[in-house]
Amino acid sequence: MSHTIPMRVIAHIHSDFPTKFGIPRQSGLADAPARIVFEPEYRNADALRGIEGFSHLWLLWHFSKAEREGWSPTVRPPKLGGNKRVGVFATRSPFRPNAIGLSSVRLDRVELQTPDGPVLHIAGADLMDGTPILDIKPYLAYTDAHPDAVGGFADPVSQRALPVDCPLALLEPLPENRREALLAVLAQDPRPGYQHEPDRVYGFPFAGFEVRFSVSDGRLTVVDIQPAEG
Image 1: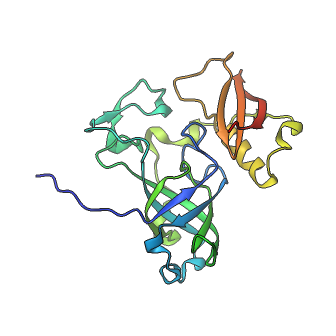
Image 2: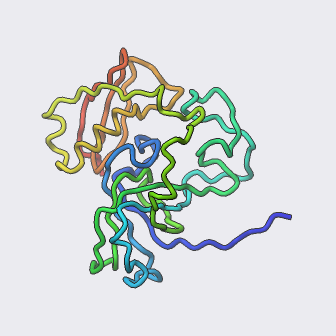
């Protein structure tokens, strides 16, 4: 018999990614800043006592924009081009029996007194703006890090960063603390794994801007960066 367990949303993340397109494929791949703002019930500074001593945190969160009725035992990971099926539990796909995500992020600082109560400032998150946070736990390097771990089909050895051509004039409207993060996101090739059209111009919103780019001959070229409409 299947059992259900009640879960509570303790916070929401505020990031530079209002849509799924462009979000880093895994946490830690782009040093994009974000904030964790707690729900009123959990805006208690005592709940964060001692957290400033940790450099990294684990976030458990809800794939709130990827819910589906039912589930499938196999999925098609973008890393495999979207054509090959593997077991759902061998992937980090959002389409799983429980739509829970796990991310390791860097803790930049803790701000205890804000209009929104205590706020955690983090970097390296792979979460869309507004994602519900279910829990936060400290990352413990002595037990959580496994340097000899094998990554299966997701091993990055065969993956290389794309060279990115982006004129400085296009980057200038962006805040300085967002430029390197954007370039890191672009170097990962944010296109879906099954879309590799050399003449196509892709676009995604980032930090209040619309970023447009194309990829040809293994090189990404930024076409335009403009303030997002609305």
